[in-house]
Image (cartoon, rainbow, N blue to C red):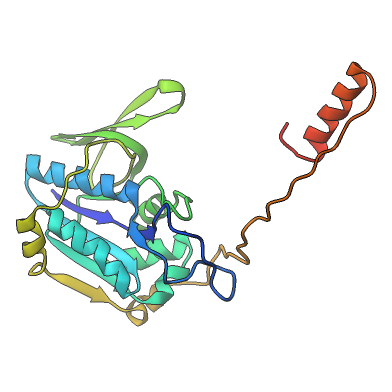
Length: 256
């Protein structure tokens, strides 16, 4: 099988939040890492390749620093990489990111496309399903198991309250992979050395521009919440205080 894995570079979970001058995103001088759900998607793709043969291709969008995500994937066993390299890709919404990926692979046939369930920064969980719609492929989300069949694949989806759903799907298809589907591997020393010689295709923003449109979603402002402390004493009998408390939780705090 030929599998494409969409990956993303995100700020490290413990990185201090440093906003840029416009207050719309974080600065470039924080530490970055592979988006954790995407790491599980890569691992599952590598396992499918080991079982059934084929090729694993990884793709990401972002500035030059995002290349590290692809290098790590190549070191773990991916065969080649595609880098949509430009800082302008960072500002795209999920719809345009999916359109950029679709444009980059339009001449390449794949059996499966994997993405992580969601990204650790935005957390929209939209890119994979939008990409499936753009390609006209069937898709399934929150995948916990993949089994290849003669007619396609059978997947196990995680639902709520401990329930699961099994779905038979044709291929090609797009799957968003749940974290914890497998145990992540480490890159070996040989793998790290081999990664330097594996092909990496670069796609510029200008090459993908014709496929893009104005963002449908935009971040206007990010800010760090101010730490404040306020104590309000409610007076009256027990029933009266309980009523006032419910009103404040509903109308002011909006938690009920």
